[in-house]
Length: 254
Image 1 (cartoon, rainbow, N blue to C red):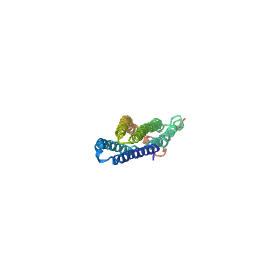
Image 2 (image 1 turned 30 degrees about the vertical axis):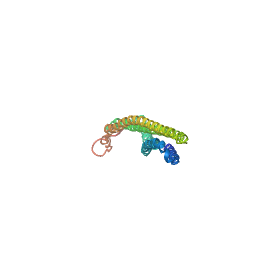
Image 3 (image 1 turned 120 degrees about the horizontal axis):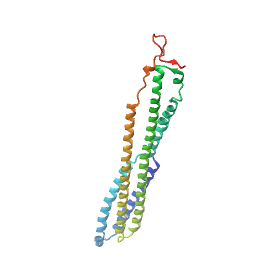
Image 4 (image 1 turned 135 degrees about the vertical axis):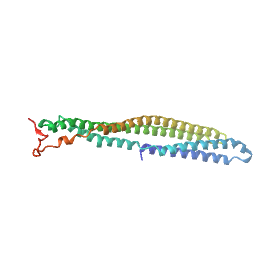
């Protein structure tokens, strides 16, 4: 598991444990209220009911998001693989496919040599284009990974702040009279956590929209590359025979 996701899940469990402790503490306090004074706890019961709904909303929010956090480390690994196994490999090949690196057009002449001469630059350009696409894809995947990590950090801070609020609420709810203060404190912490998570999600969605535009452009470049990268005219380079009745398309250079 991604370490940051694990930290978020641990903080989520801490938060749930503190909420359970708060509810258990309030239940124990109310169980000691004698029947003649039950009117005093009616507002507490109502407050706890509303708080329970608020907490359930937070847990639904948190659990749903945790399931979809993704794996930023894996995204970065895939990006690096594209560069190392595709981009760099084809870039190395492109470095060897250049007019200044080949002896063919120096040592040979004729129709085939001219066809070869015109084909080489396009092949080198095509290979370098794939290398550029691999680099752009790595950059896009890295940006997506960074957006996910930024949200995970936001989530960790939101849950951390909620835990602090829950601890304070537990400390406040030490008597029946003070319990409404604890309920208000925990409810406020719950609302603040939801607000912070909502802000983090909006920020991540904005970044993801930008990344989707990047990847659409990359897909278009891949499509265009398939259309523009013309296969060389190998037929024009094929006839090297001198015994078939016509002249060879390859002649040693003078």
